[in-house]
Amino acid sequence: MARGGFPGGMGNINNLMKQAKKMQEQMVKMQQELEEKTVEASVGGGVVSVIANGRKEIMEITIKPEVVDPDDIEMLQDLILAAVNEAIRKADEMVQGEMSKLTGGMGMPPGLF
Image (cartoon, rainbow, N blue to C red; front, side, top):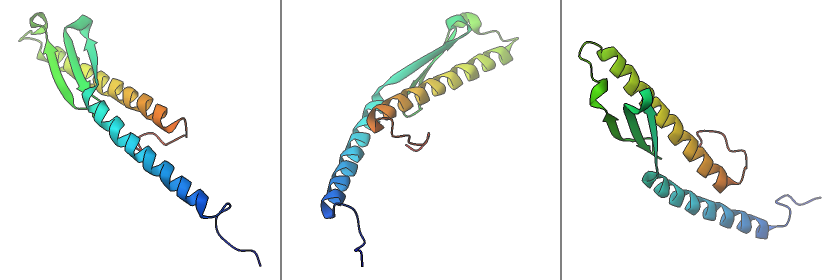
């Protein structure tokens, strides 16, 4: 009767565990580095800009005075919304790019990390 288990025995399991631990350590380091990296998005010809970090936290919003029109608050709101959404999209791209470097194209599902 054939014996069950993993091909190659316990050595393969130990190697797999070592690789998983190393990858986990690299992910923690990468997440810490992403907190310090930022992306910037500008809209309306640069009248509204937003800076976000790799954790998708908004760090700064800049609004040029010439875009502030008390009679058209909706336009300013739309510009801010567009800039924030663009900054978050860029932060997502940055995180996915860094993650793909770490995982080596292993085909991890988006949003897993």
